[in-house]
Every structure is written in C-alpha cells, then in structure tokens.
Image (cartoon, rainbow, N blue to C red; front, side, top):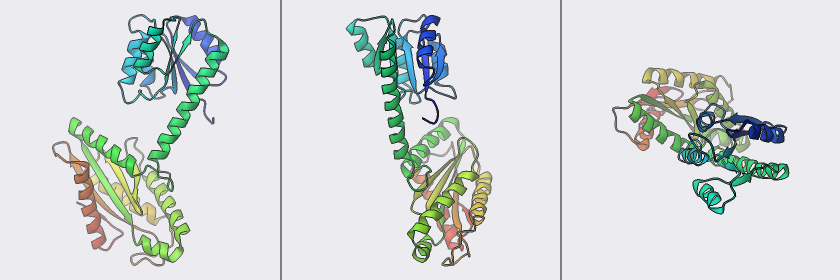
Length: 300
C-alpha cells in the first residue's frame, strides 16, 4: 500500500488501546478513542478510518449503539467494524452481526488472530473501494463517469431544495470531434479526451465542484452555490483553458485547434426541478451555443 490504512480503536480501557496499538502500528495508521462519542467524531471527521475495532462494554454509549449509529449513516455504513470484547456468549455475537459487524476479537488478545483478522478485513475493504471507484470513474479520462454524475446531481438538487440555495450546471461538447477522430484516428481522439478532461478538472477548485464525462465528447460540471454570472465566468475559463491546450484540429470548421461549445443553466431552491429538467435546460443552452457558431458560452 502506498499509504497506510487507518484503523480506529475504540475502548474505554487505556491498556487495551495500548496493546492493540503495539500489535498494529507497524502496518497501519492508528487512531484511538476512549468513548463512543469520540469514536463518532473521529469517523465523521476529515480522515475517517478504513476499519474500526470497537469495544462493546463502554460507559454512556456502548459499542452496540455506536455500531447502530454508524450503520444508519450513509457516510459510515461501508466501514467494516470488528467488535472487541470479553463476552463469549453466542447471542452477543449474533447481536453484533445483526447490527452489521464483520467479525469479533476477544480479550485477552491473541496477536496472531488479531493481525490475521485485521489484515483480512482491510484487504476486503481495499478491494471493495477499488471496485466502487472503477464503477464510478470513466476508464478513459479518469474523471467521474455518467453514473457518478447522475447520483451527484440528484444529491445536489436535494441540497438546493433543502437549503434554498443555488446550483449551476455547465454542459459542454468538443466541437467537430467526429471530424477530429476521422482526421487523426481514434488513438489521437482518446488522447484529446484525456487532455481536455484534465484541463476541465484543473478549472474547478472548490471542494463541492464536480467534473464528469457525460458521454462521448461531452463533459459536464456541477457548481453548487454558484449563480448564473459566476457560472458563465467559470464556463469561459474552461473554454479558454481548452483553447490554451493548442491541440491541433485541422478538420474543425470553427478553429485551428480543439475548442468547446458550452451551455449554462442555473436553478434555485424555490424551483421544483428534476435532474432531467436541469440537464435539458443546459442541453438547450448548448444547442444555442452550437447554433451561434460554436466555441462559445451560452446561458439558458
């Protein structure tokens, strides 16, 4: 692993934390919490763990309740959780598995068993993360794909309605890309798509901004909390960035180099719109940009 996986140890007994830390610290980055509340704060912090070792018997919030809360939240339900406990009754184990735990480690700890079970579940987590990433990332351009975009747009529109905020969408198309492929070949076309995708990703800096490949030579950018004027400015920045790549396009009818046509739309929380509505509005603006001579930004 290029970067050590994070393990969160949750136990109200300092000695148990010390023992587990000594066993695992050479192979993993260790985080520790002594209470359920501290554990929840760590999980929902900026650096969530890849695996949680959770004691059952703790004051105030016990391990079962911590597990229940983690599995009820979409941000944490995917994190594998191993209970650490002195309990050996089968019904206690059954309760933990019913709540979503993946395994048990009993006290006193047996180093070989602890390391083996932790290693197994970390490896499974890494494989699961890789599969999920492959399902949401475009294989050619290495930016989010259409499926990822659909999920993100729906989520962001719910946020707009909930917070009565703004959202802008930029839909764009590489001008005369079919002619580019016909003239230079598909290998060059793939290279062009990768370079354009990288340029787009470099134009958005805020954490919530989202760039994706929409399909073929089309790309899309979601801009939360962005009004129409700001979105048009970002779209123009994107257009100039792609022109600045200076990718030769001798077959283009609009420029000597690869260019973009871009359509912009903005929605607010007081509008009742579906993802399809927003996409259609951006697509209509994009159509106008093409009808206006291409290599330009039009706002719908």
